[in-house]
Image (cartoon, rainbow, N blue to C red; front, side):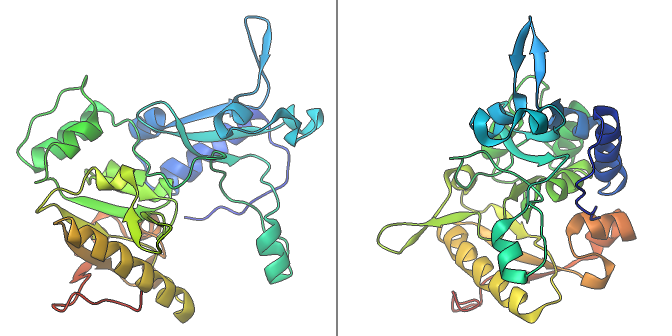
Length: 291
């Protein structure tokens, strides 16, 4: 469920409440997962008498990026990796997206920020014990609370994985017991090499064991041009995954019920995800889309 960007200065308490509503109520994210996978910070904090700047530190920003007046009132929710790194952040006072604003002629805001120099990364958040156990039971496996969840998934190719775009969508599906890896976007699972060939990002390649079933669950866009771009990207990534031995499918649902998978679940319930249809990513000839 989308929440409009706002330039209103929010207190830390107001921002915390807004984000909790957006994630837990708006995207059906389990409170325990929300608590482990996110962290809310102010831009200027005091620790042992020393000033710290958690947002700048998380996003690898220089302190001169904003003036002191902006830093003193800004808050952010950080989406945390299992490793403790920040995958993405959402600011209480989002920046103007200059490229989109110039292209569309109206003011557009940067919905999310990624750490400078991060490159394409997958979202692999810490998973609480109850969700670990729910997933393990689905696949008749065992898992403890003190081992890396994602190393455990990597070691078990019989565990199906769903790929989507955006941290909230990933956390929404994880809340229901699906193993989900979120990317920054549909193009975020691979990168182009100097010889113009494409390669899976390392965060994704580590899970590509032979026989692993991978499902794409990207947004169901209404615009024809956007759908074509998504199809091309899915075809490119699907071929790379299939080459690694994975079985790749694409989830489809009625976009009127929710553009994103979290919208679908929030609007129609978890059973709507269970009813979504699947189609092979690649045809028998290995071709898909125009990529």
